[in-house]
Structure formats: C-alpha cells, structure tokens
Amino acid sequence: MDEDTIQDLKQFIAATVSQHTSDIKSGIKSDIKNLDDKLSAKIDDLSESVAEALESSNET
Image (cartoon, rainbow, N blue to C red; front, side, top):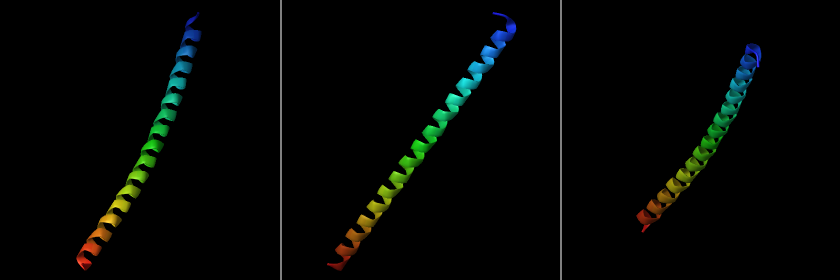
C-alpha cells in the first residue's frame, strides 16, 4: 500500500470510530434521561404517598 492509501484508511477509521462513539454517547444520554424521568416520577409518587399518610395520621 502506498502512503496515500494508508492515510485514507486512517481517516476513514477515525471518522467511523468518531461516528460510532457519537451514536453510543447519544444513546447513553437518552437512557440516562429516561431513567431520570422514571426516578422523578417514582419520587413524586412516594412524596404523594407520604403526604397522604401524614394527613390521615393527623386526622385521627
């Protein structure tokens, strides 16, 4: 292989790795956002349950 072909291959490999890394990073960010949303919903549900329990215990 000549030097130009080697440089082209290096550039292609670097671009491919960069693209795949970007895709993985995007997927991870999306997964984290989904988990954060689910966790926030669970915290809201728990807070609501605790508030209701406190209200009912104060009524008696």
